[in-house]
Length: 296
Image 1 (cartoon, rainbow, N blue to C red):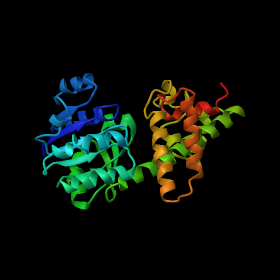
Image 2 (spheres, rainbow, N blue to C red):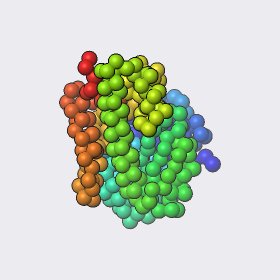
Image 3 (cartoon, rainbow, N blue to C red):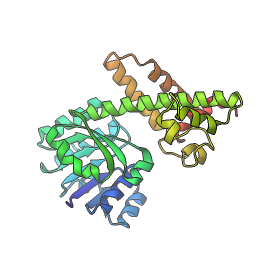
Image 4 (cartoon, one colour):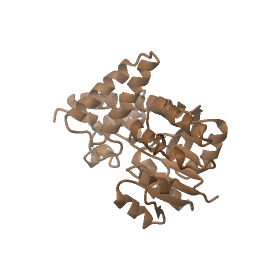
C-alpha cells in the first residue's frame, strides 16, 4: 500500500533509507539542513520539503533519523516542535539512536496530543541502509508496532518488537556495546597473531571455523587486506564512524549507571574508542580500532 511519508534527516543512513521508500512506491517528502541531499533525492522521485513543518504536514507517517537526543527533542517538543503540527492520524517513527529516557519523553508528549510514536533505532550500517536489509529494533505498544511494520519492511529485513517506548533504544545500545567489545577483541587477537608471524587471512579463517567465531571476523574484518569489501581494506572509510560508536557507548554507560549494571568490558571499549577519537580517527570506520593495536 502506497503511503504519504515524511522523512527528516538524510545523512549517511537516512538518505538511503528514504531512497528505498521511494523505490517501494511511497510518496516521500524529505527534509534536511543539507540542501544538496534533499535535491539528490528530489531528482530521484522524492518531494523536497521547504522545512521540517512542511515535511510533517499532510502525511501518514513521519520518520526521523537524527544524530542525538537534543536534536530529536528539539524537533518534536517545545513551542516550535512538530507536536503542534502533526495530525493525530500520523504515525511517528524515530530511527535515531538516543537515550531511552529521551525517547520516552518524546513518546509521552506526542501521546498526550493523540499522536502515535515508536522508537526504532537501526543496525546494519550504511551498506544495510543502501541494500534495504537493516535491522529495526522497535519500542512502542503492539498496535503502533504493527502499524509501523510494513513501512519498516520497505527499508529493512529484520524487525523486532523489543517492548514499550524506549525499549528499542536499550536493545540497540546493548547490541552496540557488545559489537564494540567484539571488534576490539578481534583486533587484539589478529594483531597478536601477526606479531607472531601468522597470516591474518589464515588466522581469520581459523578463528571463523573455531570457537572465536563472530560477526566482525565473518563480515567486517578489521585487518586491512583480509576482506576486500570491509572498510579496513578501503582506508577505513565508514561504514559506522568511530564518533558514532563512541556516542553509543556513552549512552550504554549512562544506562549501566542508571540500572546499576556491571559493564567492565563496555567501559574498557568506551575508553578505547575515546582514545581513538583523540588520535583524530573520529570520522574513520569503527573497525579502525585495529590501529590501536598495530605496530605500524
